[in-house]
Image (cartoon, rainbow over all chains, first blue to last red):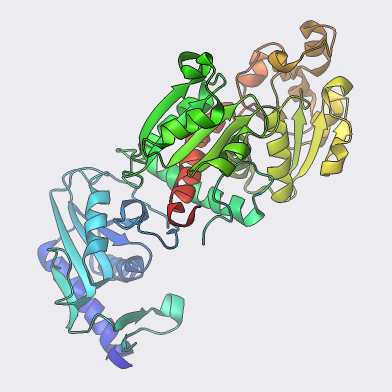
Length: 176
Length: 310
């Protein structure tokens, strides 16, 4: 097991990502943040909290569950139990920032993009991720904002721990 | 987590956990139904046949809508316009349809146990959409879901089922569902329309409408099923409505606010007066709306079990 981000660095990286968003979305007037359920929303909660401190305007913020859009529904195994989707505004013509904790094969993001367009046609969709496991993509998808790029083997696991759920902020790489 | 069963034949063989899972999944589908685009692609490679050997408006439309909202391909079959009228057996009809590669069958039949029979003989997930006087599981699930939505939970709630209990599959499924989820159930109606020994299911019985209404938090009023009554069980509809018809007057006379439900179709002025059916106590139209979400949840949870079904 190897620690990729310890508590201190973890929060510095999230601060940096929040500021990078402000560079491209100075006032968030026509932008919206969408966290992907279940683990991406822990990151998006933090980022939105940061942005709320830095900005005076209210940010359009929603949570998206992609269970019904997965491409492996009938490939056997356990059925996926959905999480809550909360998007109380139209995404029509908005600049949407999708947020997930780990970018791996890209399949989750593909499903999320399919789901997004059911809420309106966004002007633009960007992707923010805390960890980018590069060279492991199965679809042509890249992130616009990345916390940390790592090289890993397919057999390894990246685990992101959140204070809210796991009582610590930490990212580790686990060998199987 | 998944359902403990491969078919939905009745509430009788579901666990409380199964029902809870169906409710929670339906919550998510209810949100889908409020989106600008009310459709998800989950079952896009699933084909579902709706086998209706008995008339239906609400249930058939509701199932068909649920299937389409999930992206499934659907085939509709009505017995009246099919080879059944030429004498084909149930198994032959089903097998012929299945050889066209159908994954799920939604079936309504006038014979109790028909879906159980089919489940033993063909290789597809069977969903019972009402079998004779036995069960109507999705109706009970949507009724339970609607009560949960209105009152927060089913635990400890008092539900009166009023009317033709004898011929009602809705009543039996509701009793199973409500009891499993911790609600108290009372059945009310004329003695001729209440089966003997129904108290063995753990329900209270009364023949007095006012008593039932004063006791309950929710009154589920059932239709008088004249088509299933082969001998006169009460003198006249007028007499029935006089003694057992729920009216706004009854509701106004109560010391508390109760909720009125009806599985439809309503015989207005018989078991339920128009001012009660359309008044502020009624959640009849919410029941219909919730029906689509509940059926989406059932289809979703059963469709994923295709791999290990025998």
